[in-house]
Image (cartoon, rainbow, N blue to C red):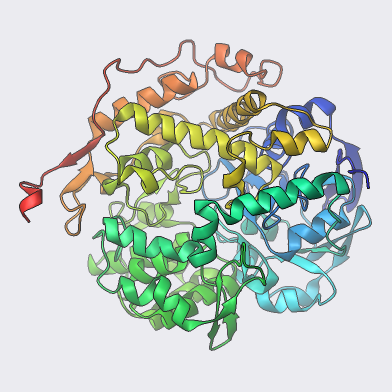
Length: 613
């Protein structure tokens, strides 16, 4: 069985009601692969600076990679667009049944490129290598579970009420809300286009014989890999216990770094409540499936961290119910949980009025529902994100954001590597581009170690998310970055070339953001993180602003960017982007310079005699 070549895309214009097929330029396939990279290349080429993220001219891509459905682990897709939350680049990823079926239904296409705005709600039905636009008036207003159930013979990526209301952090949901392209508001872009769902009718493609041995070998590697054993044992829910143990679990609106009831919402509580695992496989069984009042859900680590510790909710069942509420509404649990936490703290400071309180899960559910429908002045403000709510009411020091995106619940005051990762993340505060906290808290790092860890992980994940690889199984591909796989499908690259590819993709995204007006000021950390943590193992620690600026200079120097955070002409040329960058994108004349001394990390610590406490 030969391996089919994926070398086309489908362009969908919802305003003109047209679907056209076009070839992907050969050099784009070579230089950007698929997924994140190819999505970024189309976004940079197609969008004029300043396009309204919720306007018809914004591009929303559903991208696969050259290895989609062939790689071991869960098949994933990339939703790539301009974010309504940040105003910059957005790539968000999701697994489950939809990307598998999309890979089968698209044939030799790498993705869908959607522009325009339908006059009335529609679905986009993909089958046999093409797509049709179909009316969906009867689906508008349904939640993600109900929308998914309307297509029992297909796989669905859809929006819920939050997407219809253009909530800035609305998700694209699949499998009845079990999987989401979660952060940054791709669901709001769908809602603005009146696109209720993308429906994929097609079986997952068969793994070509040329790849079967390779797949089996990597499955065995993953089974014996540290990440594979960790994922099989507890999936991301173990993150709750880890973050709490080392004192970086953001608690009750970022006021503390430990949650007294963490054991009630962590991995052991999940195991006790579980009725099974997500998938019937020992190697990668996925999350824990638990029963709720409305059916079943699969809570991930972000739910107990943000909706549990972050909101002071002490029981796993209540956290799971809050997570299911977010899943059905189609809203990102990290941004939504932080929005509720901000409202609670703002109410305590007499800036707003709400009945939500830390520990009150029922009130939190009511506020989440109000946000999803923009019901009321406060809910309307929160639907645009914490940064927008703080701009309207005050209270910008309660919940930290970077590029207007709310931070995940790893508090960087206990691990400065996370501070740099959040600040330099291309889509806003994100713990997936680089997560150095898992090593940093156990090792003695200086600035050079931090920069190497963050910049290196960003490059590697840019490659893996362009393939598009399973986040966890992709850990087995860090040595050659998928070179063996690409050779098998006729896209030969060696590991050095792929490292350069990752750097090219990361820099192209930076160029997109620069063109949208982003610079060093957007890589700044919020005031919140300059205040010391009050409790736990990291008590007394905060981010030193001067030391962090030095760290940022070192990061820019490593990237070949100027002191303002703009890539230099030399870097653009070195990465083969000279013919890509346009006149609207300002480049730096010279690269930043790093302090030649190896400094200690950029955290202040006012603790004394720690070992005696």
